[in-house]
Image (tube, rainbow, N blue to C red):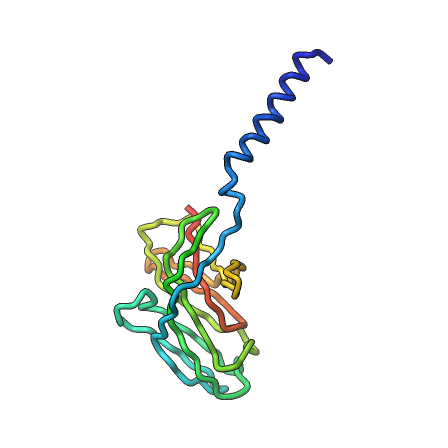
Length: 171
């Protein structure tokens, strides 16, 4: 092999490693810095299930619908739903700018999944939407998506646990 070949390989390896140093910010994981949580509504649901709709209250979560199917709960539970005004730092994608908070008394899981439908801005025209639960350390964990109705601007997610969550547009 020629010296020229080794020089080209060396330059390529050097360029790749230098590029990795220059893009250090993109290697940081996505992270949420919690702010203040505002509770919008409290509601009780028994073993028969229920439906909660957040009307036009002037909040970031207006239009949110939570569907709790029959059998998801083994007792009556008081739910609270609200939003958090913290800061989401992303590596990729575009943030919805909305953090939904769903709490359920001292319950840590549901016996059946519940469906959470939220409104999104269809003018963003995303290729897809990805939902993320946010844990206590601000780390993001993907959650199951139900459907995306681009025309009406509604996306649904499934969860078996109370959670703080958001969604990200993949453009």
